[in-house]
Length: 470
Image 1 (tube, rainbow, N blue to C red):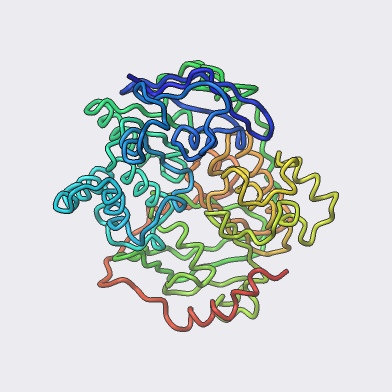
Image 2 (cartoon, rainbow, N blue to C red):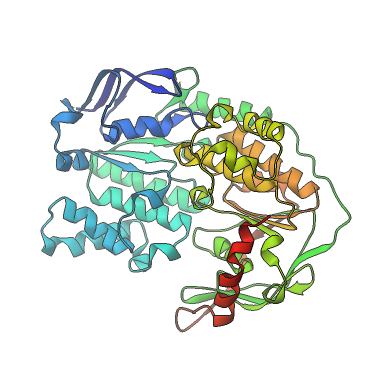
């Protein structure tokens, strides 16, 4: 009894990939490869989201082919955690989403509350049950998506970058819970991941995508990862004559029923500042406060002027969003890059990003990792004073993550202040002159959910279009 692909074949960018894969109950296997090499495509095939299926070979789950299973049987056999959790939510809150999962399995209504409570408790997100998804952090959404997979009681889990939006402590906590689940219910897990250290004692075998799929044990995979990191070029941080660019006085940031109390902060031009901390600790909200999309108290100054009174703040700020699909405006990759940039420069950048063969495609058809690299590159051209970057290396392998950070370092070297939200502390330590850890800041209880004051809302509405102007 297992999930078995025998002599399977599929194509990615007209390139043939052959695969034979066996995943037994209780077993954990990992898939590693560069962005755009077919990892998520494989998961969509295994989950039955691609109607055509494998070009060749056989695919069976517990000795039955996928097309022999009803949709209900398939959902209890195999569950997929999407790389971008926003793409799999249908409802407004985690509780409603979990109930929706159970409704689709025709679970008796009387049994639903208990099952929902168990899934929320297992993933330690009971406090988020009735929060709108629009208020959750990327890591919190990832945990909700995992709860949705677990509530279906599937025998096999496909986890696409399950730890990319999670801090190291939360990642290890999730791994411990998944191992506990495997031990209790013999669940087979296939995961895509680029953080080899996080899964060192858990994954039994890796499938490495190069020209095809190659089986590698955990020890060999760890060695390959270390060799790759040693081969990365050194980081050169250029120091410019510093000018005060961004400052915070008496700054408090409400996050649900608490407010984070910040010390007075000052960041200079031409520097890279890392922002890290637990999932849901307020990192993305910090960026949104600068953009006047998040309520706060205190004063934020941009180039010495209070940002609420700044004549044109969005002409001075670029924001690379956590979900790159939220910022694409053009019909093709080339058009997304070409705004204000010479054609030859765009071609060089496409090649540098390894998406030169995607220039005529829609940005929405790229892999998640490719979308993130495009999102970074598209906004680097703007001559801004402040660049806000939310999880730029999510979904990237080691080389590509390093390359993205080098592009951001070049932007900082031109005089721009760059604020980067990331859970990859090693990358932040290599490139940033200062790291702000949100875990270390004091928190105050507040009575109720704060509402943005009318001045902030008016300011944002009247200035939003200016954010996208050159």
